[in-house]
Structure formats: C-alpha cells, structure tokens
Image (cartoon, rainbow, N blue to C red; front, side, top):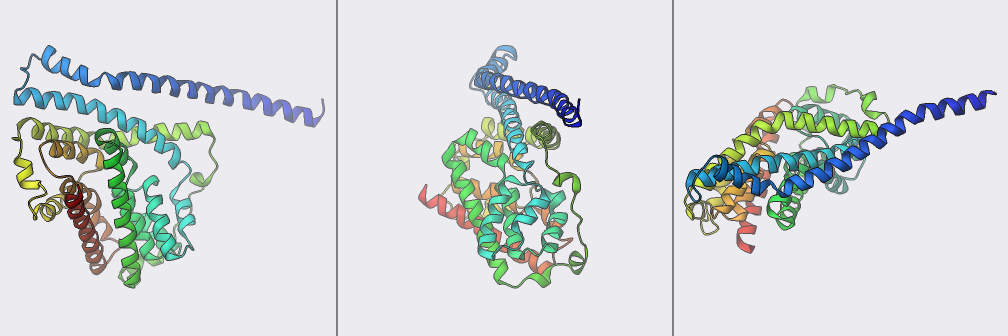
Length: 358
C-alpha cells in the first residue's frame, strides 16, 4: 500500500466518527424540536390545571389569576429562550468580536452606521463586554459614530427581545420594535459622528492594542458550532433566569392585582407626560429583555399604550444606569451626556409617535 492509499484510509477513518457524531446531534435536535413544539402547545392548559386543579385556587380571584399567569409564563419564556438562544448561538459562531471589527473597519461612515446597527442584532454584547469591544473598535480605526451605532443596537435590538416579542405579541410589535431600535442606533451614530467626539474618549483607550483571539478565529466544524450554541444556551440561561423569574413575578402581580384602566390613566396615550415618565422610571432599572418583557406584557394587558410601553422597555435596555457606569471607564462625561441625551430623545420620539398612530 503506497503513501497515498494510507493517507486516504486514515482520512476515511478520521471522518467516520465525526460524521456519526454530527448525525446523532442532528437527530437529537430534530427530536428535541418535536418535543418542544408538543409541550409548548400544552403549556396554557397545564398552567390552568395546576392553578385551579392541583392548588385549588378559585377562578377569577386576584391570586388565582396571578398564579396562573406566573405558571404559564415561566415555562413559556424559558422554552422560547432556549430555542432562540440556540439558533442565534449558531449564527454567532460565525460572528466573533474580531470578525465584527474586521467587517466594520474601513467602511464609509453612513454605510458603517447601517452595517453596525444590523450586526448589533446577532453579535455578543453585554455590560461586561462593553469596554473591551469599544477599545477594540477604536483600535481598529472604526469611526466613533459607527461604534456607537453598534453599541446601541446590540443590547436594545437583541435577538432575545425580538423573538420574545414575536412569540408574545405577534410579528407586528416585534417589527415595530426592531425598526425603531435600529433607527435610533443609526441616527445616534450619525449624530455622534458629526460632533467630532474622538477627543471625548479616555486617552488610555487609544494606547491599548487588543490582540486577536486565535481560538475564535479558527474555522469551526458544524459539530463544534452545535456545541458552542448549546454552551451559549447554558451560559445565558444561567445568567438571566433570576431576572426572568423576577420579571414574571412582577408581571403576575400587575396582571392579577392592578385594576383594569389604572395603567391606562398612568401610561395611556391620553396622558402626554406618560412617555417621559416611563423613560425616567426605566433608565435606572437594571434588567435585560428577558426580564422586562413579562412586565411589558402585563402593562399592555392592563391598558397601557404601546408607545409608552415601548419607550419604557427601550430605556431599561438601552440606557440603563449600570451600563452607563461601565462605559464611563472609556468615555468622558461630555460624550456620556451626548450619548444618553440623543438616545433618550430618540426613545421618547418613538413613544410619542406610536401613541399617535396606534
């Protein structure tokens, strides 16, 4: 047997276990999707049975309504999160932070703002990664306006928010949220880019050269991408589940105990001050999309207007106080003020606009 035949045999032997592994993983994914769908369709009936059958709570009471809401929403949102985070984890395996910087570097500013806002939907971003991402973008020569378009879009128009909004309220609300969030990101990036704000970045941020991560730049097999997506599910759910439980508990309390029409008086479209008040209340709150959406669901059910609720949600996710504190490590106060001011005005415009047209 010559060397060529030996190499071919070795390659075939090496490929066999890998092909078997990927086939088993695909079969497991298909079976899991079927089980997911069957269970998801039964959630409401199961919640009603546990609330009124097992626990013996009376129908129509405040406590019964609140408990039924809680028992239905907890598994529903958890299941939606598992599905969407796994899918987006596969997408994210193609979009590392290093590759994102490469895509954005060298682009014309207007095109860069649009591209950065779109990339923000599918690329990893959280408070912990704000500082290194910002430094990496600056070091790569990306204009500061483009950088801000990405930083605004990534937390505000993230995949978890979009899928949960779609699942709970339908495609129309999800599309409205996505389009307005992207518009705020693009316009804010464009405005900051026009204001010559490069000098408002802390000097040390320009002096650090970030090294590319060789592991994340390597080409991954599909089996490795599936493993990465599943690990992403475990990592994200491990971090957000307390916020989900808390958010659903707050939403259940609103759903069961807040009188009909009370939210309409406070957060309705007829109260002109409802949008600024919602932004003012939302900004200091620390939560993510998964934690705040159950509260949004309960507010809408009690008569709050869509525009006011969208403004509240965007302010919680887009300009939360903890993220501002972390970004202060690399941004000077003037740029922080411009960033918060422009985003706040954009969010209030969205709220007023949708209170008028819807």
